[in-house]
Length: 307
Figure 1 (cartoon, rainbow, N blue to C red):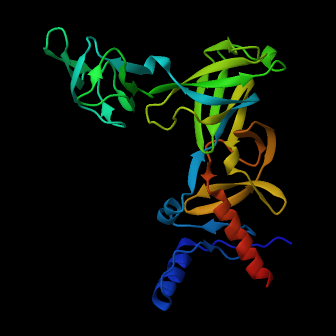
Figure 2 (cartoon, rainbow, N blue to C red):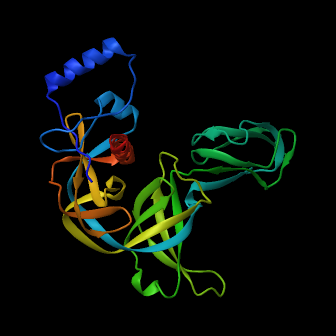
């Protein structure tokens, strides 16, 4: 049996809230509206509390549904972003200016060497900006052509996705790819296909990834959704917005400070988005983040009414 609640008028609620403020200690709890003549279930949350709970919304509109092929791979450093720094002339290391893990800028002095042939000091400067990820020498040691330190710049990295023979006919350069690991998501495209080393029959799809915010590091195991076919739909929502309530698929629609569970008819979907055929209009604000909080509150209130 459905549990119904009503939405009081704004002034009515102001009087109720004023009474509660005087009569009982304040509490930041979700208050669901009681049953009304409109027979509509809603959850009312003040905007400030909704932000505190991480309840985020987006505007409903057109979207793209992709038929994707799931591949697995690993993040790799960009070879052009790695520099093994060595001394130009053999000599005594007078100073090492950086430590392991230090950030260096292009042109910064990283070491000073006293050349054996001239006994004159000369400086070694960083050829690129990045992080000191390896250090192989210290002050007082001899530099004789070995790598003194390694600087890595991870502003751009690669993702190597493994393509097995059964999937290779569907994959080609230029295809869009969504890279995902846990809650980290990035969009890119296959730059080129590279045969695996040795006798493996697999192919490696190499995908460049911009990483200016340093979210990704080399060596991570990731999923790659290669978009083989794409379909434009008139209305789509993110999958995180969908909830099942009373055996119906619903999204929560925001009107003012009121969240209403709206029964929707679903169409095609992919791992990220779902087409909406009915129940939601373009331009409406729907809950994307933490919609389960609203569902839980409705279910709690329904249980309390049953008792």
